[in-house]
Image 1 (cartoon, rainbow, N blue to C red):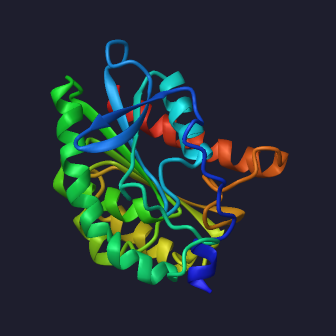
Image 2: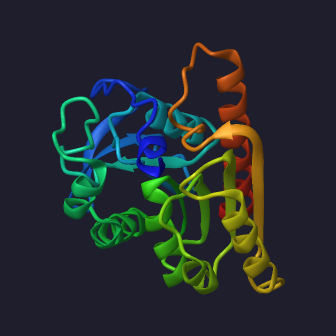
Image 3: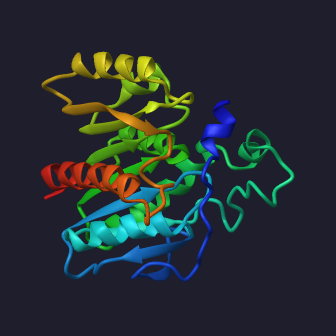
Length: 241
């Protein structure tokens, strides 16, 4: 059931989608939206298993750029995102080649590349698979703020080690990271106040993946996703500006 929900509503990948451009960053091919000269802070977006060519994650990056951030979406899967229709491997087999531990190691040079561009304030948002990678970054203080949107694979021990401001927006209908687990995240983070600020919310009537794998032509789905995107941007505006 969890594997099914993790891969439901797969996007139609489009390498030409978005308002931004492609450039190598930290050794990875990266979708970039925004101007390094006009922005004072950067946001790293780490995708779910479908990768950086999903139109919606690029749309979210474009929103972040419109809000004044330099937004980057690296290809952490090096041209091999999970393909639910064309991949003979179950997602758990695919994950053996694309573990979140490798994602973390690949993310570190990206963060350093952003710092070398002059960004002293860097935030990261992770969707599903990316949520685990962002949580690992949030332990190391290599970024200034974190947002997890319907994360996967994040343990209670992970949350105990978070030491930067973190926002978690979770789905009410989620067999991967169920509400009961999210409530435990919230309890742990509450013990860190006032040293570590946090905000945790379980969004009613939405499913795992709702912020990035939604139909833009569905008014209700878009409304729920846009509300989450706005909360993400407000969090970054609070801690990166």
